[in-house]
Amino acid sequence: MSQFRRCSRPGCGKPAVATMTYAYAESTAVVGPLAPAAEPHSWDLCDHHAEKITAPLGWEMLRVNHIDIDDDEDLTALAEAVREAGRVTSGLVESEGPELHPEDPADPETSLHPVHRARRMQDERQRRRAHLRVVPAEGESEFPGADDADDTDGADASVDYPEN
Image (cartoon, rainbow, N blue to C red; front, side):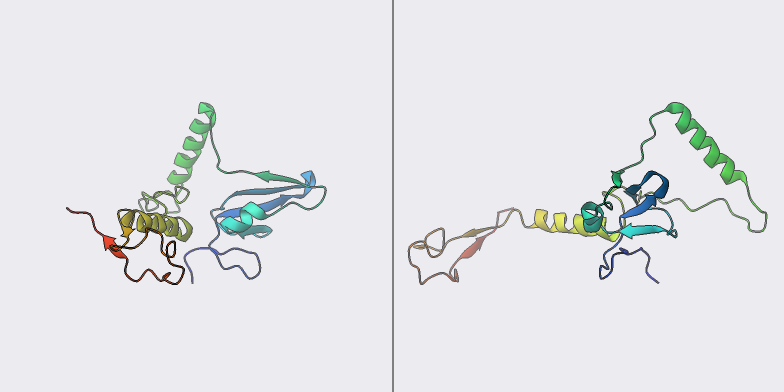
């Protein structure tokens, strides 16, 4: 079984990053952050499909990028509710609570989600090669083919490595 949910669109196997639900009473489609668990009547979407999806005719599309709690009272109430929920135990299993993970799944810098991890790896590869540049061999133009249309392979070009 895979450790991440996939996009619900047919033929798309990319990792899901958003969840779309319909509020039928308000004729509104809502695309928001990936729900913690898969639910019936909701659709998980990859990054591409979450950006491109549209609402049915006559409906409103609501996009929620992140959930932000500004009010101190709301934040305090939420913290209290979480604290109370943590105190409720059945006594059947001795546990000190859920295992805490330092990475936030919504934070692209620390998330282990495949979409965020792939972007970080691509950025790292680009940074590793940023110090390299192609230097033309003696007697060649900086742009292959600029002087001679037949010599476009660039086989005589060398790589200049910085000195440590």
